[in-house]
Amino acid sequence: MANKVNISDEDRRLLALWSADCVERALPLFEAKAPSDTRPREAIEGIRTFVREGKRTGQLRSLAWAAQTAAREVGDPAATAAARAACYAGATPYIHPLATPHQSKHALAPAVYTARAHELAAGDDTGVGDDELRWAIEHAPPAVGELLRRMPPRVPGRSRLDTLYHQLDEALRR
Image 1 (cartoon, rainbow, N blue to C red):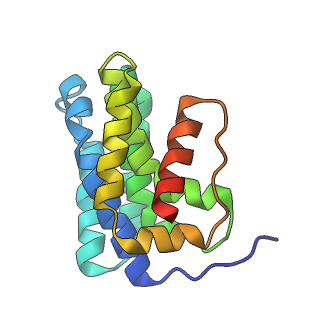
Image 2: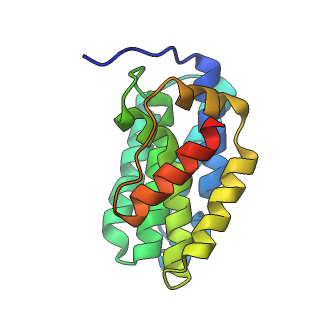
């Protein structure tokens, strides 16, 4: 059984706000490929409502799942990554208070998938993704790093996504 961590309502709001800010940088990549599909943007709007009102609703969860469906349907790798980022951002209020790598993945995924979306849009240029991670690190509230320090650190892994997770996790823990 995993250890529990304390995640306050304020932690959830700050994580959600940072996630939405990160993902909004990738939404144009999705919207360029699917201009009439508003599901990822609606997920981010739902997160901003959560930040203002502090209520986790069934509607908010539905918006996150709708962004995931949009990711499966769009057919472009960069747009898919952008919509996945929106899905993960939409789900941040539901992060479980467990000290597991899986939960830290949920906290980091909006920024990681935003970085990956930009890389893919730039012909798999990892420098572009590194720039996006730097932006995410510079704009993360201290509460995000504090939350991550309550969870096990990410390991490097083999894939580019694993590398992005590890780099972001390591930087935010400092």
